[in-house]
Image (tube, rainbow, N blue to C red):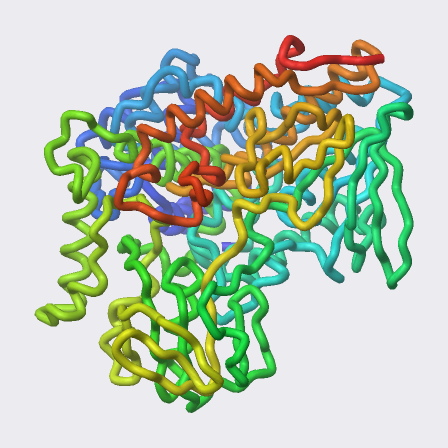
Length: 639
């Protein structure tokens, strides 16, 4: 349907057909929200068992009744300009009931403020309240943003809205960060599109529920162009070092462009370099002796022809899960070397396309996209958070950490067995011995079907060394035409190799003991005044959710800090050490209760000493609450 909402409502038979392609639970939330009539959610309550219960089967007569009623209400409330009028908006106290029915379980009242904010997007979104206040000041600090990936672009958009002067430094010749650098076949998101987009810039162009790399990159390019950021970005420019000048109360950023060194002075630094931007080659003896191509997924060689070649793949994590099925289609032989198996989720939406009708509904039906986002947030993050917490009374701690976690385990094993069948040898190789969610959960990208192909072999023997021709394990020697490494990133080396020097000449990497990064709320560090981090320590979401949501929380907090500086006519603010230590102590205590610290789990989430440095242990609502506004008492201010 290409009609706008008002015109579509004049053609009931056509709009009924389109609404039948939408999620009836989400449509019911819309109807209840704009009418304040809770009787509709009572009609679907018995049939919604979870946020994404793919077997939801609301009786046809109930679905039709709700759709017809929604059309009638919209027809009465939507004017010719497609604006919704005469809304009898539901009272706050009933919002939790709507949320609870929409996700199929009880949602606490503490989610109401966050949900109200999510629903209230427009020219005066509460998430932009600091921006509106900052605009009032004539004199504003200048900002250097490092990186033009998802968080750097977000920071640029928000600073631009606040009329704060800024420059984005980008080492590549394009924006996009990881979505520019990673071009391997099959590259895409394992988070649903509709939460992997800025809340203020929803996309109705997604063709799939889980988009591939090109779609995400196109979306980010769209955002940069729409918000006119290109003139603020210095491309092909490397940041060598950042040093704080205590006398001038300024940061000096040393940059290299066209082999020429220059400096930028700024009042504020925002690091948006992220965690997953420094590819890590496997630490295997002799790897440099191999005399044929070694291709890391994050440094993909588009010119190499894999067709009919004998290829090794080292690594079975997220990128390995995506690239392997694509390689298996064209290679003569694909030999996959697995150190540790991963838990893999069956998700019917992972390969599904969005219908034209569903896209139209997301774009045109008021509040539909907002309620859909809530369902995604709950189903992929907060709704499963409790299952990631250790139950001290659980009797089967070797395989799972609580009853729900054990149920997840059994369901995933059933899925694996349904695809692999009676092949006991292969089953033993692919079923992990640690609890679900201990490592990053992966979406089934036809992985098990691929393992059954005649040209694919899964090797779990330990790799002893690599020679000039191939790989030697403790049992066999293999020759290959090329080796693909899907071995991730140096995630614990945050902001590295950029040298960051704070007050009294303190080096940030030394302060962090090289691989033990910490920050208050993942954003600020003592002795590094006016230095803010996005996607910093312990802000990665390993169990779902969306790094975009976290990014929006972080930039709001940063804008709140800038607001404090301006309101009180301060030059700098520096996080108090006791605040920093208290937050990280609380964070580590929470991690001790989480699945990532299970004794059978060793992953890139943890540094060499075993501390979790990458992941957030909090629910989305917790982090949203922590970062809603900065506390003046947490900082030392100076004129």
